[in-house]
Picture 1 (cartoon, helix red, strand yellow):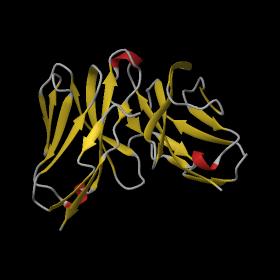
Picture 2 (cartoon, helix red, strand yellow):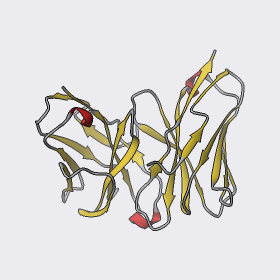
Picture 3 (cartoon, chains in turn cyan, orange):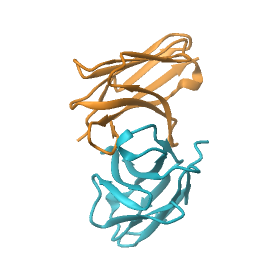
Length: 115
Length: 111
């Protein structure tokens, strides 16, 4: 158990809908990262937050957004969902300043299926 | 596109044998990390090797890093059935606040 929790574990929805994925980092970790894992694209970095502020952006679509709250939990919002958004979405956390690029601890993931 | 490329894409060996996986990358890095993922589950961090290190051990794991060739290898000795999983290398490029993952090696240990 990494100490990172993600809810829900599974999500089934329809195209055009909007969903919110939630992540609670390990106790004391200030950095939260979101990744998308799909069969064709592999593991892709989406976005990173550190202590409530956005620090880095990866291959995140404009239809997707995220935020980190004062209690350090994070939410990833996916809107206008398309079939191709079906994937595993992982949250990871780390304790150090972002530039130290230390070990990231991954949550169990949210499996999203868009029908 | 992915920075890291693992080789082979899939590896099947007998229990007790050693398994070697390789990773190549393109840009200068701060460190390189190996992760394991059991089917459909979260990633588990295995080991981190910094750019100024050449070799690191952790239990049955041995990682090497050759920055001149931009490559790394992960050796799992005396493999067990429980080692069956996908293994990913992830690079931390200098100045970039993210990990870049390869496509992974699918390792199967046959009893």
